[in-house]
Length: 161
Image (cartoon, rainbow, N blue to C red; front, side):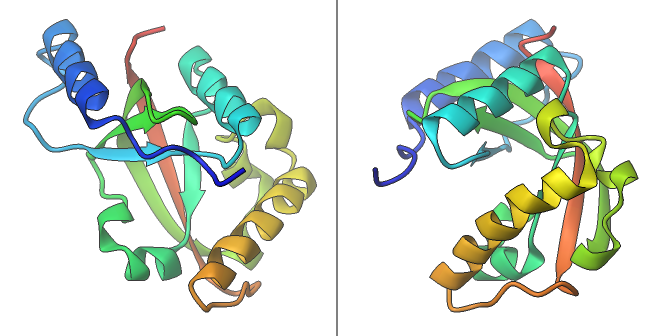
């Protein structure tokens, strides 16, 4: 398996327009990022399900990877179209809070925004450490316990629960 399909730009554009029509007082402008969270069909489907039910209210990312691809860097107020494994849009969220910390200072209070299955700190680390190790290795970097992490809180805007 090679990984998630590239986002379907036609479907993403149509989804964005639908969100703007459905919530014109909330969804404004024309700027948004497209993001996939997870790396297998199963994990991406589960994560999107948690977002759509309101069970997952945030995510985590690495500034070291943002430095390699600045377009992925989250910003307060960003609109983000979340796509599934096949690149189809599933949810529109907005970034409501950003916190810059280090991996070794992450607590259960931070992981509480994640999906129900990974909120416990030990479980969260057992999922994220190998995932980030692989991502970092792909760009010539190494996982480190003192590396910076961005905690990104978001709110589901569309479709509304």
